[in-house]
Image 1 (tube, chains in turn blue, cyan):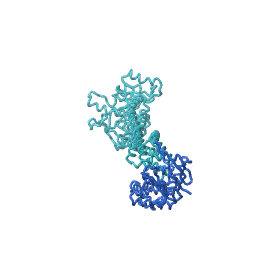
Image 2 (cartoon, chains in turn yellow, cyan):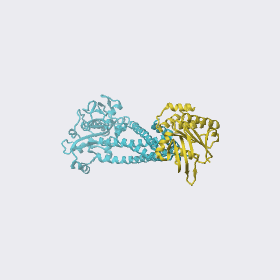
Image 3 (cartoon, rainbow over the protein chains, first blue to last red):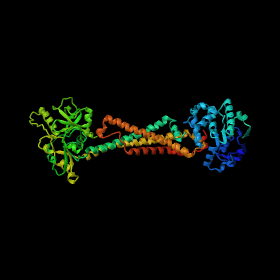
Image 4 (cartoon, chains in turn brown, cyan):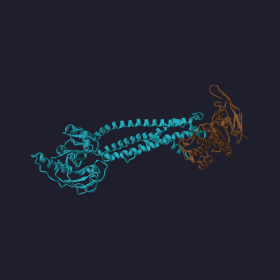
Length: 211
Length: 417
């Protein structure tokens, strides 16, 4: 049983550029690192896995659901329920504080807002002290952790992370990767990280290289 | 964490920007509300004051001045007319005339005008006594309610009138003491600001006064111990300021009445409705100009709101993309943007209502607009709902384009820096 599996996926871009992606098969609850240099299509692959864009050829199955066969609003609903995404740049709702951002994430996914759950998960990842602060007052490391918390919050089956360590120092990178791996495991989510960061290779058993 | 709370917090993310929008809107709304309240109430007031007066007979001069003096009591009389000149119109059996109210004007007390008239005046205008009684003989006065309250005068107080409409430090003071015998009920009309006495009191004061100036004046003056009726006035060879006439009906003869007077007599006949509509036209030009200013302000406020929301959309596009990824439907983003526009307009409307009514309240207290022009701040017209509805519509117009853009946004495109 795979959480993510893809076969013969090809995506073409404006200007005729075409990328053929290696096949992926990731078992449930496991972690995968997709690494490669900048511009090799890592972020495109992440967008494909998230259903934000669709492949021109090939098929992608997430939790046994073939994304191409869904309508765009069905994909939105599926994504909201099953996939948590950490983008490279931490973006939050600026008018809301840390806790409110998490409560809004629950509400948007159709999950009843539960302050207790939010505070628990903040405490789990060491952010309980900043729960009432505005997101832009957090440090880079805290912001990346909050992005991960937001992705993890609604217990998605799959977490996708795009260059989570790009703006962090070595210490914060190690700390974040350990947290991501252990918590996605305890929350039962599969984890796919795309990155060019050599420092995080050592945390993953399963790796795919893009060239 | 409701969506409306999010909308509210988004509005106050840039407090200066939102306050600017709200204040601009509220100034526009306040201006429109002030214009509405003034125009409507002033129009009603003009009509109300002249109700029951079809023609004013007075000395030849400016017709508008005559209306301002005899109806609104804010200008000087055009001159005097003799009883002889108007004798036929004082006849109770006149076929066209229902009521004729003689007025003697020109004296004052502490800048308050003293009006000499008959008891018919109060009956015709349905003015009743609050305290005391109507005057019964010469040198008795009754006070309008506002004057009684302002001057803190009671029944039994005495006053000394001045010749002329301004208080001239006793130089032209009349000799007789006038005794307050009654205070009128509040009417919200000019009567609240007047002092009333008998016509013959005026005569008595002025014949006395004239003795100094004209020694040849040998008229023996009689002090009346009753209030003269029209039929009794005709026996006197004296002067009054004007005669307010109400016709029995609006037949052709009464329509020709004024013209025939003006052509054949040495007195002037003035139609208050004609003069008032002229006056209204004058003030309308000013208020039309202000309405145009309000419309331009309204367009500006809508445009400023539009710019604010477009800017907010631009700044928040990544945020909105994240919301979409977290499960928000495009329609939710549309709702959030529209709500931001509408809520700013609701706040602007609310503040505008308070500003408009508040400003008018202060102005009406300070300039006594209530009794002078019938303008009050504590009334609410149905048109104000319309003003608020138009404001909300402007909010909708300003926010529809940003909201549609939010609805249509491409997630991947908006995630990019």
